[in-house]
Amino acid sequence: MLFPMPFRRNASNASSDTPHVRLEREGRNEIRRITAAVEKVPWTVSLLQILWTAGPVTLLGAWGGYLLGYGKAPTLDNYIFFISFTVITGAFGIIANLTHHLTGGGRIERTSKRIERVIKTLPELLLATRNLIVESLEGDARRREAAAMLLRKQDLSPEGVELAALELLDDSDDARLIGQIDVYRRVGLHARIVDLMADHRERLEPRFNELYDYAPQAITLLRERFEGHAPDPRYGVPRDENFIERVMAAIESDNDLLMTLQDVEEMVILAFELISGRRIPVLTFEYRGRWKLARAFDSLEEARARHRIAQATGLSRLKALNAYLSEQSSADTLESVSGQRAEALLNHSVTAIDQLSDNIHTLAHELQTGRSRDRHALREQAEVLTNAIKLYKSVSSAYEEVGRSHAHRLRMAERWESLSANLSDSSTRLRLGPGRRGLRIRESHIALDDEAKAAVCKHLGRYLEKANIGTLRERLRKAERDTQLSVGVDTAKRVAVEVFLALEPHVHLSRPAVQRAINSSNAADFGQLEPNLSAATKAAMGSSMVREIETDLSRTAESLAVALVRHYRVALEPAAIDFLKRQYGARDATLTMLTNINLERSEPANVSYLSMAPPAVGTPHRQWYRALVRARRYLDK
Image (cartoon, rainbow, N blue to C red):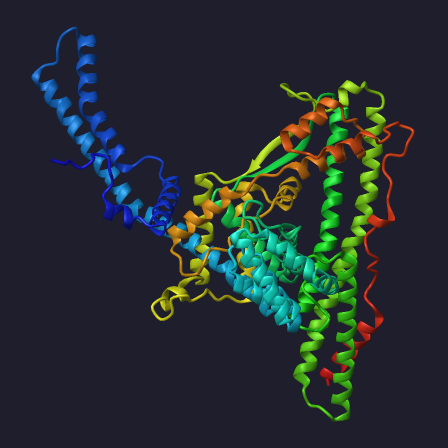
């Protein structure tokens, strides 16, 4: 007789346990674990504690105390008193505990629903924001931005690659070729990829170079597809730098124009990453020792952080100006601001505002001569020009602050050098190994524990309920399975503000070191998340995608080494070089180059290079004010 194996799973159960079911189970466990952080002790455990304390423990304590106090066992009357006291006390304790948990059960249920709602809604907000980004552009710019979003998807099919190439190149033959290369990549036939590249590179490379100035990120992604490479989820997706600073500026100035839709996308991604368990490493310098030197060190670190923030602010204002002009479609020449240098962004914005002012002059002239009666169009154009001038002024003041912060940084560097020059090298060299004193590299992480995740989800859940975000999809689920969340630009930007307010108490986004660490890290690729997935599936997939990200601190360590040598005038010793290479993977060529820098005190330490100078923004042009005055003069009649 054959007996079933005791530990063999039933075939029907094994077949029914599909990957989707496993994702659901893992996601439910994740949501349950976050919710449990709100209620530390289960109510059943509390109830048993009350019964044990009010019952046997109280009776034993009373009997022992009476015996020690009177030297004899309690009488029957004493037992009746103690038992009555125990029953009454225990009953009141049980009633109070049950009342607490019955009334608190609704609170826990609400917290659980908010966590589920946030985990389900954030990926949909991400998709809705990307749709708003594409919707805000016109013509070729819209096609190129949509193509870039397609090419960032790691699991994009060959048909999708071909569609993205067609949107960018506007040539069906070239698009079909790149789609064929992606088919060969999927089956590992790199020999055929090399053949196709050799046959068609001379024709496609000039086309890539021609389009690069208009859409650098999209063309870079397309060139990688042409070479047989696809995005690797282990390396993530580069972030749009300084997005946190722009969101903070919008909050402080109460001006949503200072924030772009790309910033909204980045904030939503960051929130979902941290809720999914992302840990972002932070590397900073710290010095502990002589108080004068420590104070000079802190002043120099603060000055460097202030200068970096000023530089980021100038570029952020410039991106916000270009994004606003692109959203208003005031110029056909404006493209997506992604990947553009400051000089190119400034030229684009000036050209767009010049064209806007010319349009206002034309509209005003047509109204005055009677050839047109469209006063509404003139009023709209004048409002756009007013906002554009305000943003241009903020760009100009931001770059003026760059100059002032640069001068302050030079003064703090000179102060550090004058103090450190009188001390021995052992006081200022980079310390390794155990200990706390001296100049050291400090490691930390940006992350949320379960309690912080629950608090963030409660904050965002309350806002989503108040703003009625996410309920439309629930009402239309039966009518259309893949219904996507739909929000407006103002609502999307308000969500970014709420994400910042929810995360700030836990990860301190306003700190320069935190912003620098987030900007230097790649974001997780959430391209596989779809609108029709459940909250549990999204939670499991988000956690899986976050775990796939590889931590790369090589560039961060190299930037610290550059700051150590160029700003603090501290030599890199062989032990420090070996430590940076072994611990963080810093490149040997970069560290070797730093060892060749002359650190003599007589040599000027801080030099300003023209290549690093900010763009010359200047004041708003007079013709812009003339157009605005002419429009208002006619509209006030």
